[in-house]
Image (cartoon, rainbow, N blue to C red):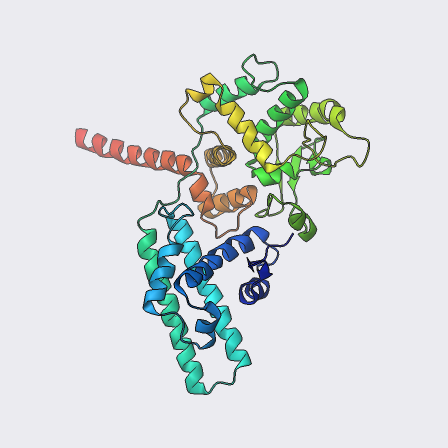
Length: 380
């Protein structure tokens, strides 16, 4: 079902017209987030006895007191706590884009003189500036983005030993579930797939002969709207190489274990099937796998929270190390390669965000080399 902002069970005209006109319609998760942000403005208006539509229609916008009330609510969580810096930034952007759309909408349907248009634009700029300033101040009180917690090679080896289908420490029941989860673990380890991309993999996306690869396809609009959990909303199509060892694992899973869960009526084309009904796994199932793994005593002793994003960061960091170790790769080429593998745009800061450990190691090696050079010079 496509998201709409409802008030009293009736769609609110301006917010819904905005998201449809603003080019966000293929991204259901973005639309939902932006509409939730704007809904907070309407809640403040109801609580304080003023009309959002009336304030915008007159081109005067909100009063300073009303903007203060809006800014306070936008900087809070549902429980009344301080919202994070990223949440404040997104909400400021949401409300500014909404106001800009509404001002333009009413300018088109109302006859205005040039002076009135100028004054409307000036009022809009003041409104947006005040919202940005207020939420920037409030956002500075909240938490900044937390980098994904990466795993060391020894920690990965420990998880591998626990996840192995024959391990006595394996927390999962049934050989099918154990083998499937072991394959999932290694696919995430080698390819840095998002959990949404993982559950949307299909049999045809895996090529196990010759040079084995996994193809990540950009989902169609129908697939995006059909997935209630928002799986793969960020996906960029790409093809990622995998090792021969992983190819052998996937071949055994595909040709033996998976066949045990295929249903005869409308069988799923998904690569990874649910043990309950033979249908495609959900993103929440991936989270539950990591939760069960986290509960194993030897894993809990690591003191790290296991989650799909951590595996993605670990995989991307390991790729960066391997590419850098080969040498003869420029910084631009390295970023292009990692952006492609990770499914990010060239301009995205996520490459640095997900490979902080490798960057830190490289910086440490450079600094140690300089320090050694200075020490050698002093000893001469």
